[in-house]
Image (cartoon, rainbow, N blue to C red; front, top):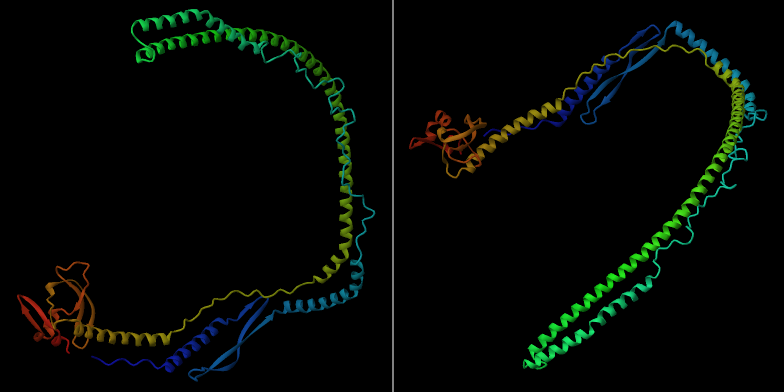
Length: 449
């Protein structure tokens, strides 16, 4: 079945990886410390020593080199540097001498008392000359005569008497037929008695109800006729009121038109006066605005001159302190190649894992065959299988391990795992038997117990 591989020694693995890392880091440092020479100077890298590094896990000691970077100016730039240092010393002495003056000078505020005053208002006015009339007044009447003489009415004269007139007409019409209705009632009663009918019987009551409906219809007709008379009287009163109101409206309209013409004349005269006053006020306002703008411009110019005079001593000192500067060498960006570190520890562990997985796979396959097969003799003929795929190899017996389905099984069925009868027959013919033309494998003989 094979022997389980031994795991790598952690200390040996760590020592191998640390040595690789240290060597790679030193090689990269040597490659990247590139010395440079320019017209303005040079940059030189030199190994100036080493220090010892001991791996705390393995105890292995390594010599790590140390470097020094030296920058040197060209002779011309060195002379400028020395002159600049001397100039800076002189300027520092001047600054020290003038510090007392600057302290007193800057402690005083700028005097703006002699400058023109700031104009915050141009002195404009919204009263344009005193002749502009904002109130119409002086004969212009804003109230038209909308009261049309007091004769206009929305009620008709005598309207309260129309109901009484209708009632009188209705009573007159009804009274005119009273004798006839009494005669008809008496005649009906006599006829019913002569016919043998008596009061209270169904036939008697039916005839009397018919007569009552006839009297009611006659009453309704009388009421309608009296209503028509009332409507006629109302129409006459309305026509009289409309005529009177139209006359009052005509008089009021004439008065209003006359007043409107008078007002138009007054507005035209006042408009001319107001336009002249407006032009006068506009001219005065523009003059005031121009004067205020001129005074503010003069003040602004004075402030600029005062600030310029205050800044002059400071600018002189700043100018003295901005002496010549040396030109620093302009070093180029060199290529920075790096050597990748070899992962020795990873390689060692990966090799161990591969060997371990292979051993575990062989163990699992062998155990699966022997523990998962219900019968030690199983159908393994190649022609009885489909969806075949090799997934492993049994080194001890030199047989491939395959997954497959038997023909006729659905695609959703789980796959089987086993060997192919054709391979077993070549290696160990005694482990193969035939039944009805198909080969069966005795796994106890094929792969061992």
